[in-house]
Amino acid sequence: MIRAIFVTKQGDIIEVPQKQVLDSYIADQKTLLWVDFYNEPQEAVESLMIDKFKFHPLSVDDAIQENHVPKLDDWFDYLYIVLHSLAKNENSDDIETSELDIFLGRDYLVTYHECTIEAVDKVFHQSKKDPRMLKRGPDFLLYNLIDQIVSDYMLVVEDMDEEIDEVEDKILESKNSKVVTDILSKKRSLLTLRRILSHQREVLNKLARDEYPVIDAKDRIYFRDIYDHLVRIYDITESMRDLIGGALDTYLSVVNNRMNDIMKTLTIIATIFMPISFVTGFFGMNFFQPVSSALGPWTGVLAFAFCLLIVIGTPTFMLWWIKGKGWL
Image (cartoon, rainbow, N blue to C red; front, side, top):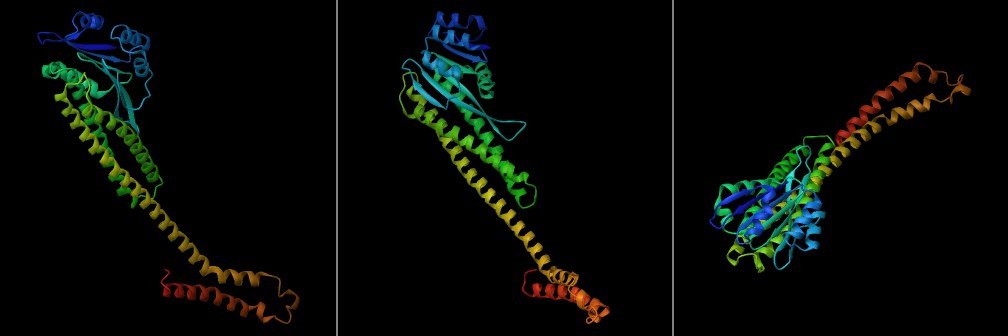
């Protein structure tokens, strides 16, 4: 799908039909044009970008192939920018990333993405309702697009923060091993988030500090503002990583304490019944059979009473002794 917004010299905003997109752009290149390629066949996109917009084949190939980390390439007449949007998977706790490839020229903005990106849809519809967003130039339009992407980052971070709080509450209450699965899932999501933020932060730093012909000097302050937001989000993720690491250590400590309590209980039970096992084993042997006539009383009532005394008295004494030591 190809959708585009065209701004005339008179300042009128027109949503251009697909078949007229490039014709309108070529007719008057002094106006602003935003073309968004969404899930368009790669062959058609490559032909349009190279033949009509005159983008370098290497940058077009990077955009079509995707799977790139956030970066910024200066091709003199335009900037090629790779950004990633983030969203939480509704069926799991994983973070899904979508690559957004951007070509920024003096009078145009071209975006390409294979998946639906909510930030692009929001800015596209806002730009149709608010003429000021488009009339200030493609670099200001790029600022609004990146700002919306970063705002979505904050929503993801806030959701993860709430989920980490829930996991911390479950650690001391739940005895289910699913808790450690949740912790590891959050840790994996945080690693994905930090990896994206670290590269994206470098891209925004370049846009805010370096000079590019396609970006007005007075608009660099807006990119600096987004950069500050990204730094703050990155610092929050660092704190969250420490929290999830501490939660994992706490869970392992709780599990070890529970295991120690179980082993302590089993050891006490084994210690109490160890004398009984000894007596049972001793008198269960055929040791008295050859001399049964000489030891007749030991194999009769007296022997039974003696064994019964040992069976009852020994555990009682052991239990009293263990409590006295404070082990129970």
